Length: 313
Image (cartoon, rainbow, N blue to C red; front, top):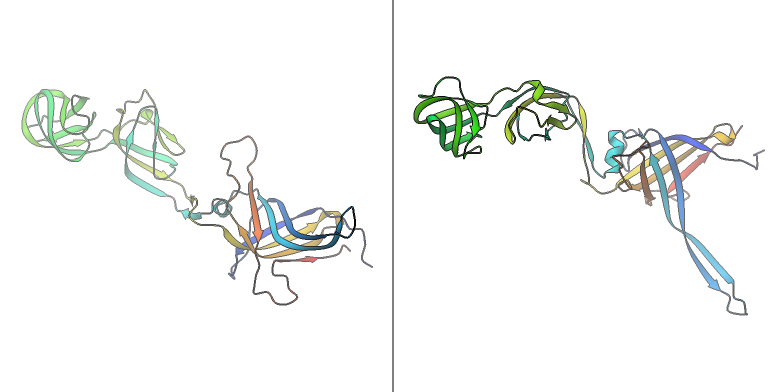
């Protein structure tokens, strides 16, 4: 005989896949809330036949079936759901001579989150210039940026000459101070950037941090060689809500862990309510979803969701 008084405390695993597909269901990980919420459309006919009013007739229909879901696992697939976006696995690799502009007391953002910096050096340049004394006058720039620290070479240029200071030029046309006194007629010159010692920069999660005391000139064009580990790239708001098919494998702890299995045919999951990136508590991904009708279900089968409840032994 079925026990009349049955309590309920639910735990279990939530699985999802794109509705309409036949692929594997994905376990979403730890989930602290899964609640089905039915909104009622209530129609009442008042009693107008006597004083005091009241309700003579009442019709209640389910207007909508909603679901509150809180995911605790911040894996890439859950994050993509939360952001109404996509997740792409990026294979770790090495990047050689990525060009960027470095500023003192600031971070130089790299294209990938670096795991190690191999080298940082000034960018190269090709330009036309003439030298009189210690003044280099640049009249044309073919490529790159002229900057302090470059070693320059060209016809008539003294070997190992370096650019030591800016004059009227700030990377392009203008004057610069060089390390050796000399005279060189206008000629094609190449500038090779210096390789900076590791003490002049720091590895940061997003790229390269350049301290104020660094020997790297401010606003310098830099070539960074680095390695990065495999990571997931999440692109936010590239889509709309996701229509998911869900299976909840539940256990009723209040009744000897009797099974409670729920199938949700089509669950419209918009982006999560928020994504807290800074905080003192463990993060949560909260969704306010809505169960949509599955028109393929026939007579006697719910078009919304179905529960299979095992009675306790």
